[in-house]
Image (cartoon, rainbow, N blue to C red; front, side):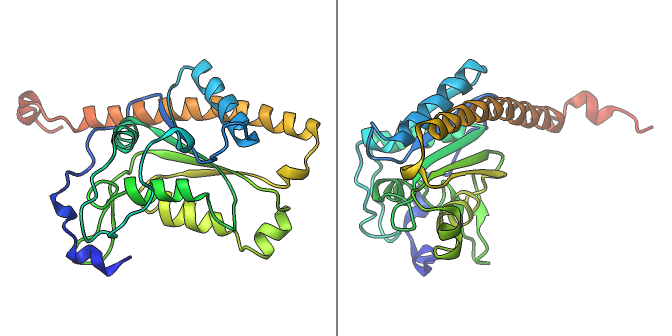
Length: 241
């Protein structure tokens, strides 16, 4: 973690607020091309999740207006654009976050990387106390990464060492507290037949329904925990048995 965190002025920013709501899902589309196959997968997933009763908030990087460059690191506050504030608000209310991205140069497209740089800020997504161990502020939410690539499986793991798994899953989503993080990698997309692409679309439809059920269960579980933690005057007076 950047040592600037201990000198940052970002302690002036409010932390993340709000509890996840049952059935709320945030979908982040990282492909800059709205006509890509990745967009088709995202659309099928969203339609399936909504048909299963989820409330889905979609944020496509290709349609968002924001500066993807964190110009001063964490040394100065860079005001958030409205689209980034809306994303933060929706994540605060979400029980599940799904990220759709292609693999480019072993990582994610620049716009998606910039989104995480700008929106997943200290005091909102995580906090680093004097001990140096991060406090994950987005706990209580599950996540999924849908990763498309032209590379075959053996090349991605043999040559890239699962690069996106490390950068996006471990160092980003799990770092801020999202877990469990389910991973859906699709290999060799650029060389896939029409039949295989239809199978993947059907797969994402099924996954969308599964994630909708998971989001509903997560929200209900958190609500039950909150209710159990409420202490009433009557409970304080109740005798132990």
